[in-house]
Length: 182
Image (cartoon, rainbow, N blue to C red; front, side, top):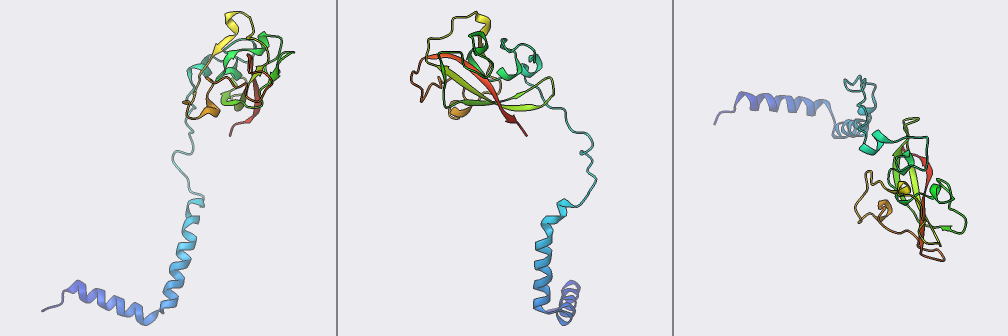
């Protein structure tokens, strides 16, 4: 049986490589290559898409949001609030009215401030201890911007969050900034 040209060429190349290198040398070079391979993406390479970052996609709420009047449902911090605004009930955007206490637990949302274009993590906390605040319908908000399903309760605004308070009676909701979202 005759040996093909490719078989002879492969055998010759393999024998020459084996004569000039040791097993330890080959294993050492392979190990070095494997150790350095993850560093290649860190090299400064001009990327075609790096020059133009895509514009962020704004939700319906973010397009209508304003940063002047905290007693309106379209105030930027209220992107995931569900309830009566405490600013309409004698409290503030992040403080409970007198005679109520803040719930020790809250739900969270990430809202974009139209004034500076940055996104912030907002903690929505219910104020408890009195009956629901009697105010105009303009202060009853249900903005479910990017609301998560109920299987993620920490991001759901459909739950009365008056757990751990003296009274579980819901009064109103606040929207405190926790920090800037990255």
